[in-house]
Length: 76
Image 1 (cartoon, rainbow, N blue to C red):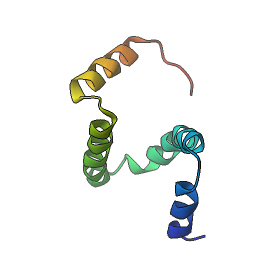
Image 2: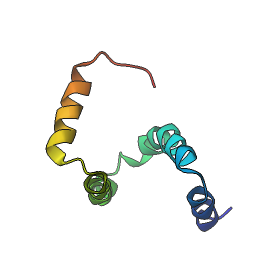
Image 3: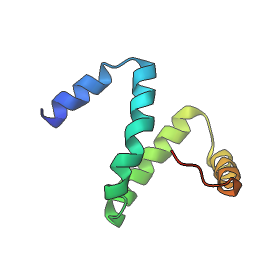
């Protein structure tokens, strides 16, 4: 299966299926690719764009991250 076929299949999922897919696979995909600083610099604008489209601002995200950081570690 090509990356284009995978992309098209993912785009045809329902909203709920897309959400579940992102939550289930993003942590697994990120483990390998976050080790490359160049990729992280490419990913940051994408993540900031997603954040902006969501209506949440960076300060809200920082506050949320701060709250999450004070909670005991949870297995995902």
